[in-house]
Image (tube, rainbow, N blue to C red; front, side):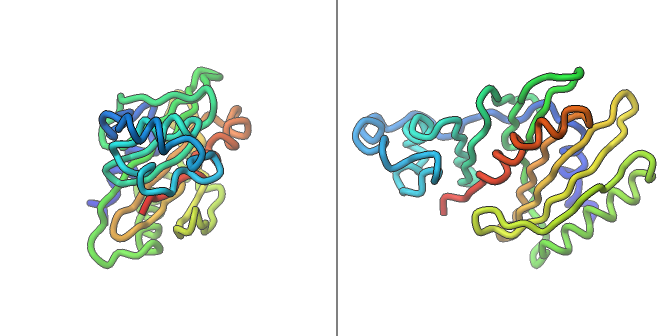
Length: 213
């Protein structure tokens, strides 16, 4: 199963960036002017077809505050005020950067892994756990908390862990959501001293993750 764990290894290493390519292209101006305003709000990130369409990305972005839509995988989410996107890390669909405190920029990165046919969520989670047991000793990596979650109807697994990177310790909350044979991995990180302060922002991103179809 190591072949499907590479991205997991990358994402836990305190990524400071990601792809900020808002792939929706140019907005459909007619839709933007006549169809957008009322139906897309921050309670429901645009479930209407025209708001989900890539040609209406700007319309959708304007209608929902801090809304991000990924045209390739057709998911949307909202991110906290004051956060920004970045395009510095490969193999990541999108990265969000928050405040910098104690010499660390809080961040959330979203990536995808295509899994072998028939792989279940529990099998993938077990593989991830085994991977880190083999890769790190207990004094470097620690699994602190884990739970099964459901995010907008999609079953998933969430855990909190710490990783000693030598010059600093990083604390991360990660959600793994499986749709078909694609694992969508949301990894949010801070240092231990700011994790509690950052966690509500992490939850905003994780809990707003939603597919348009």
